[in-house]
Length: 425
Image 1 (cartoon, one colour):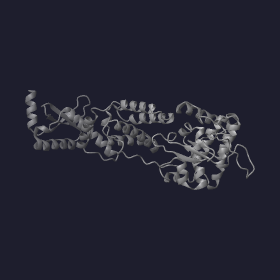
Image 2 (cartoon, rainbow, N blue to C red):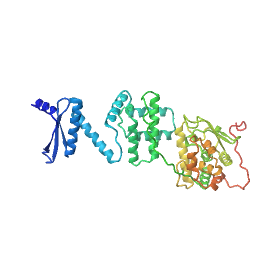
Image 3 (tube, rainbow, N blue to C red):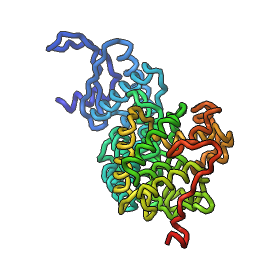
């Protein structure tokens, strides 16, 4: 009897008939048809218009393709899910891709992802590799946080090779909708791009889906700085209470190096004869760094001499520690204590480097030169936008007049002994 009913339904045009839900008592229009296997399939509709549209589509496709157009229950569920998605996208004002394109992409993802590691496994391999490369602790910590958050928008067991650019863009759209700032989204995108670039070089995936996903536009605001009097109070307090910290803090303040570079610099990198700081490729950004020279102002020479007189031997690393992680811990302790002892309660992010750049730009108005000093390879547009008005123009020289003790005008700074010279050896 069931077989006969299936045969009858497969031959005639479907008709919408009223059907009452025995539980709710609600009346629907039911359309009964058969799928490719002969199984009877019922679809319920709330309006006659929807039912007739469904019937018309089935009838048209049956005439064109015959029984091959009949769909199974799983396919019917898939179509329902798709229509719900399209309805939501249209409500939110976004255009939806064609269903055939979505299916085609899904099939390609299955093909590409069949032999690639799961996303979580790939993330762990990448982090392990970065740890072996001994990247700075701050960079590694930020990388872990950003990758974990980025991949939270995907299934951790999803094959890495199945991730598409469209999926990445949808994830970033969700991040924006969730209230994350463009800068945060951009940071997570960069971390994910590094992950897939690393995997691509090792042939763990066949493409980098992040490359074609547009990064969010970030409007850079002006940077946070401290005043020359705050710098003076901090350095003078450190000179009195922890003189070993003074060379690192002073080089940071008067040469504008990066935090990670401070942890790698040695006293041998301070050429007191030429009054230049040498930041080698090894000390600079790993993988992208190249040697650069930063002039050492007279104020820095004064602080180095004062620290040496207070018992800080100019030997080894500016910040002691067998590796970057240990040096970072020492540097952080020095900075926190120096600020607290000086009574400084507000401290902007990366204050010493940003302050150096701001005061140097105000004093010289030579953005290409300052850009070269700090190892900035992105041109001067961003530098001018963020630092041009960070401090008043007439305040530029005040930063470089901060000395260990007040001295009469015109008195020349005394240079410390050069640890690289034969005399000091």
